[in-house]
Amino acid sequence: MSMDPIARKSGIDGAWRGLTILMMSVLSFMYLLGESVPIVSAGPEYITSLREDVRQMFHHAYDNYMTYAFPHDELKPLSRSYTDSLGELGNLKLEHLSETYNGTALTLIDSLTSLAIIGNSSEFEKSVIWLGENLSFDLDVRVNLFECNIRVLGGLVSAHMLALDSKKGLMRSGYEGQLLRLAEDLGRRLLPAFNTPTGIPYAWVNLKHGIRENETPETSTSGCGSLILEMGALSRLTGNPEYEVAAMQALRKLWSMRTPLNLVGTTLNVITGQWIEYSSGIGAGVDSFYEYLIKAYILFGEDEYWTMFQDAYTAVQQHYRQGPWYRDADIRTGGPTHRQLTSLQAFWPGLQVLVGDVAAANETHRQFVQVWEKYGVIPERYLFDREIVHPTERYYPLRPELAESTFFLYQATKDPWYLRVGEVLVNSLNIYTRVAGGFASVRDVMTMELEDHQHSFFLSETCKYLYLLFDDSFLKGGNYVFTTEGHPLPVLRAWQQWLPPSKCSPNQEMKRESKDNALDFRICPNLQWKGCRNCSRRVESACHVLDNQAGHRCKLDADCGVDAVSCRRRSCSASGYCGTWP
Ligand SMILES: *[C@@H]1O[C@H](CO)[C@@H](O)[C@H](O)[C@H]1NC(C)=O
Ligand SMILES: *[C@@H]1O[C@H](CO)[C@@H](O)[C@H](O)[C@H]1NC(C)=O
Ligand SMILES: *[C@@H]1O[C@H](CO)[C@@H](O)[C@H](O)[C@H]1NC(C)=O
Ligand SMILES: *[C@@H]1O[C@H](CO)[C@@H](O)[C@H](O)[C@H]1NC(C)=O
Image (tube, rainbow, N blue to C red; front, side, top):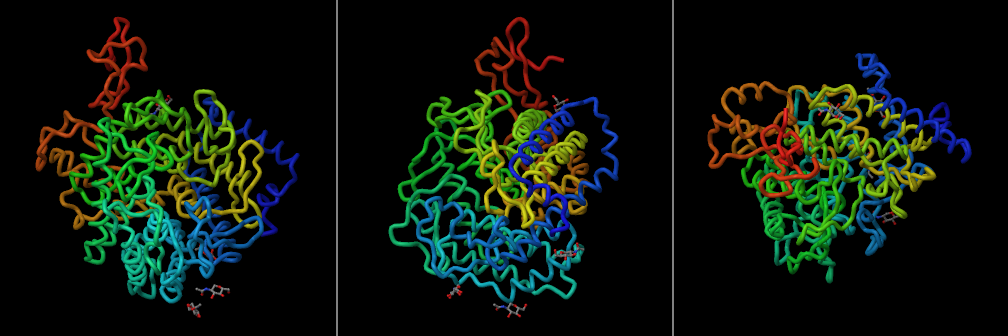
C-alpha cells in the first residue's frame, strides 16, 4: 500500500489538500463543460483504462477490508480497524446495541456480486465457501429490516443466482446452494417483523429473539416498501411463498395510505397505519419505494405493480418537480416544504431511464453533475433555490446514486459525455476520499475533512456502477434488474406472470427480445400500442406530466408538462398555449 501514489497524495496536509482540491475543481469543471475539448477519448483504450482504474479502486477498498476488518462488518479506513455496524445502520441514536455481536462479514457479502461483475471468480468462490462454512445468523443483534434486507439478503440471493449460472463459471469446484440456505435462514428470522395489525413491518427485528417488547412502531416508507425484490426472489427460489406474500401485503397496505394526490409520506406508524411525517419527496425515507414498484413490475411482470407505479410516478412529476429539480411537498396539499437536492435523489434519473423518460432524466442528471463539480463530490443536502450547501448536512458518505444514473443514461443513449462524467467521478473519489487504508467518507464537502468509515455500499454499488459504465460485458446474454443495493437479479421468463414485452405489438416484441438487458423494458408510448394483447386497458407512457392549468394555457414554459407520447417537454407558444412545437 505504501507504494500507492494516489494514497500518498491524499495523505498530504491541510494546505496542500485545499490547493489540490481547488485545482481539481477548476480542472474538472473546465474539462467537463468545455465542449471544445475533443472527444477523442471515447475510444476503446480510454474506456479500458478507466475500467482498470475502477477495478483498482474496488480492490483497494476490498483488500483493505479483508486485511483490517473481515469478518467484521465494515472497514474503518483511517484507523485501519473495523466496525460491527449491521446493528447500527439506520440507528441514529445507537439504541439497543448488542454486546456480543461480532459481525457477519457484511462488506464481503455486499461485495460478492461486484466480484462476479469485475470477473474475479476465484475470490468469489473462496468467499462463498467461507460464508457457507462460517456464517450463522443465530445472533442476538437487533437489525434494521430494510438495511439487512437490501445488503445481506439481497447480496446472498443475487450471488446465489449468479453462482447457479454455469455460463458465468464462478464456482469451478461446484456449488451446493449454500448461499440460498443462508438467505432462507435469514429470511425466516426477518418474518416476525411483519406480525403487526397493518401487515406493515416493524423497522427493527432481533435476528435471534424477534421483536422486542415496546419496539418502536415508527418506520419509513422506503424501509417497509422496498422489500419485494429480495423477498419475492427468495420465495421464487425456495418455493415458500411466505416472504413474497408478506412483502406484497405490506406494499399494498402502504399504497392504500396514499393521499388523494397519490403521494406517500416519509414516516408512518406500523400499528395504526397513520402517517407521522407528511412532508415528503423522492429522497431519503421514500426513494426506493418508487424504485421497487417499477423493478418489481419488470422482475415479476404483475400489472398491479405497474398500476401503482404509474400513479405514483405521475404524482411525483406533478407535485415535486420544479424545473429539473425535485422539491419536497406536503402530501395532503402539494404545497412545497423544502427546496433542496438530497444526494439520494440522484437515483431518480436512473429510474426515469427504465420508464423511457430519457430527456427528463438527462436534464436532472446534468444539474446534479454540476453540483458534484461545484463541490468536488455531492453534498448530502444542497439548497437549490439559494445555490448553497445545507448548513449542517454537508457530508458525502461515498454514495453511489450519481454513478448509478450516469450508468443508466449511458446505456440508454451511448452519449460519450456520460463516460466523461464517469471519469470525473473516478478522479474525485481517488483524490478526495482515497487513503492508504481504503476509501473514507467525507464529513464536510467544504473542507473535505474525512470520516473513519468505508460503507459497504461503496463496494456493492459505487464501484460496481462505475465499472459497468466502462464495461457492460456482464449484461450480455441476460436481463437483469439491479436492487437498490446494486445486486443484479436475472429477469426470468419462469418468474413472469407475463413478460412486459407481450404488451407491445408483435414487431416490437421481437425487436425487444433480441435485446440484452432490463434497460430495454422501456415503456411503449401509447400510440404504438395498437397491437396490444393481454391488456385490459391502454397504458400511457409513464412520463406524462399534465400542464399546470386547464385548457393548456400558460405564461412560461415552466407552466407546461411533458407530452405523454414523445416524452418531450411541452413549451409555451407566443399565443399562450402549451404544446410540443416542432
Ligand atoms: C464476540 O467476541 C467477544 C470478544 O472476543 C466474545 O466474548 C463473544 O463471545 C463473541 N460473541 C459471539 C456471539 O461469539
Ligand atoms: C481477485 O481478488 C484477489 C483479492 O483481492 C486478488 O488477490 C486477485 O489478484 C484477484 N484476481 C483477479 C483475477 O483479479
Ligand atoms: C471458517 O472456515 C474455515 C474453512 O474455510 C475453517 O478453517 C475455519 O476454522 C472456520 N472458522 C470458524 C470461526 O469457524
Ligand atoms: C441532454 O442534454 C444536453 C444539454 O441540454 C443535450 O445536448 C443532449 O442532447 C441531451 N441528451 C438527451 C439524450 O436528451
